[in-house]
Picture 1 (cartoon, one colour):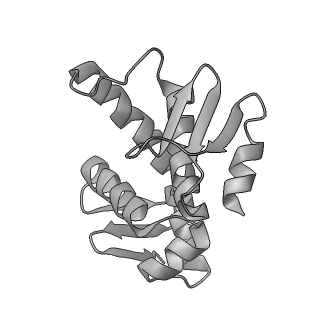
Picture 2 (cartoon, rainbow, N blue to C red):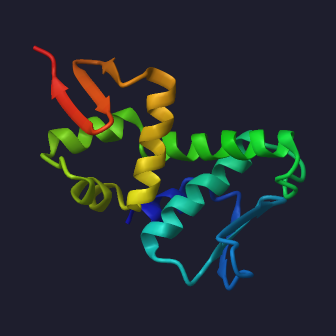
Picture 3 (cartoon, rainbow, N blue to C red):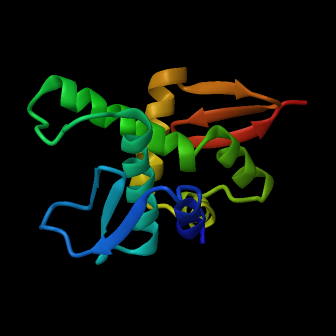
Length: 149
């Protein structure tokens, strides 16, 4: 129940599940987050992480994504969401629990495969093909984690 746990981390935000217009999964405004209630719990978890990213990182109306500044703010919020629920620590935790396939990792983190893939692409852009993190080597494409002895 990672979705519910993430909800409880932000009691100051009113989070509402409701039917949203087609093509809209989530929306953040004035300390309110609306999430499309027709989505699966894993999708809602990913949507909530991104919308909390808007709460934590952006200000103002960014609904016009044809504007370069709005696109940049959207990207910043998404990256915040990836790091919140698919951090390097989370990936190491999956490794320590023996979860190595995309399906196992997604089940453990309660996220969608697409969200995992996007998070790994962000890490690959940031760190390159791999990163040494604590006592582990994390490879991002394909995902592989090994312990450094």
